Image 1 (spheres, rainbow, N blue to C red):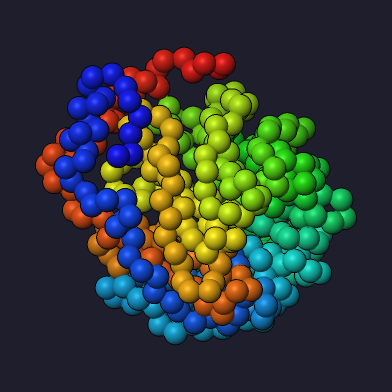
Image 2: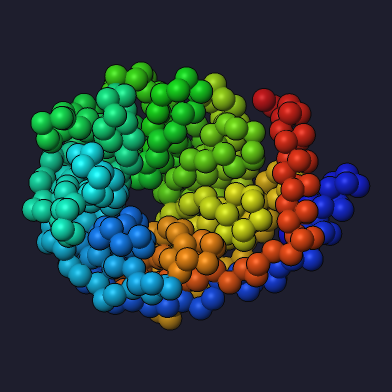
Length: 400
């Protein structure tokens, strides 16, 4: 049973919650494999052809290309289409950069190009790529409006020269202006969120060789303040920002690329700082972490892609606080898991998973969610759990 012992009324909630679902091991079906151009690493989703269905795009490190998988009614995907050839793609984001109503793609490479943006066309597909230098290394991206001009901007982590993040501010005339900020040592994962509750987007980067997360606080005009570091465990890799304990504050979860199989959760205090991390066990060499409601119970769960394990770990959010022990779902025979995202691909109201395989397979995996429709007892359990969480969130946390 995924539960921590608690007060009597919390125990009743957990007993009711057991009435409406299958065991956790049944929450995702077997992987559905789709062939890709090769070496899929980063992955993004949007409705690229505007047919009302979610599509996928992957950055393919082995083939220096981007593949797009167009979603089909009822689930599944058409065979991949190679949209353009680039330079060893790693990170990828789908965002309407030029605010024309069509999703664009931006890819960060590991080598010399930096980032390449391709703008979505009204008739579908993408225009020619436009390249911008951002330094070298295993670049990752995040997107937000950093200067409050109503246009999405980009932030790109990079390794060389030195280590840092380059902020690319969208121009109304096209292209970007840029500024560089120091960020730890070999930053990998990068996310944005309002960590100090000032209404402005901040940045956080996972420093692979410093074992920390660096936070840069946004100033609202596209600039960022001095960095602050927080402990994130050995070989920090993947990073996600979300409200993980339902206290309306943004928290961080960091996956660690070590044989210790760790995931560090840092609860935000709302002033831009974070409590000491709670540590959970996941699969070996976790390269990516996301936050999503995997079992449709209204609570945020954490999921990791485990490169050295060939699985996805799912840690289910608990009604009190914290997360369950991990359940594991294989992503295919003889392939690893590198990046993942959650989206409802078949229109059943449940979040499914898409997983890339990096150099271990010219393919991606789709894991369809099989959580049963909740019963009345299950819905009551979720409502009571949410009420209890709000009460618990009002209590001061030890060490806060």
